Amino acid sequence: MAGNTFLHLTTKRAWEDALKVGTYSVSTKGKTLEEVGFIHGSFADQVEEASNGKSYPHVYGAIPCKLVDGVSTAHINPEGRLLQD
Picture 1 (tube, rainbow, N blue to C red):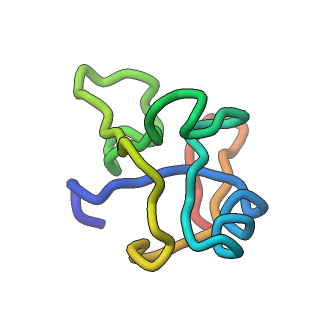
Picture 2: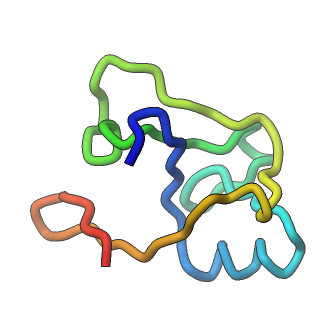
């Protein structure tokens, strides 16, 4: 995965809801784009780190679903590591 790939963790339901309307607008767990003002993201090397001294990327608008290059399922194991299924 490219180091500059924008990643966003979400729930299966939030993504399925986005597909129904054509745009994704969840900022972070339990908060919408309208509430926060942007969609939280990370780069690959930031996913498992709460803070690594780098700025986290934000998207200041809804993301058209057709622009999403890929979706995969994942979970966080008991040690806090992100594992793709």
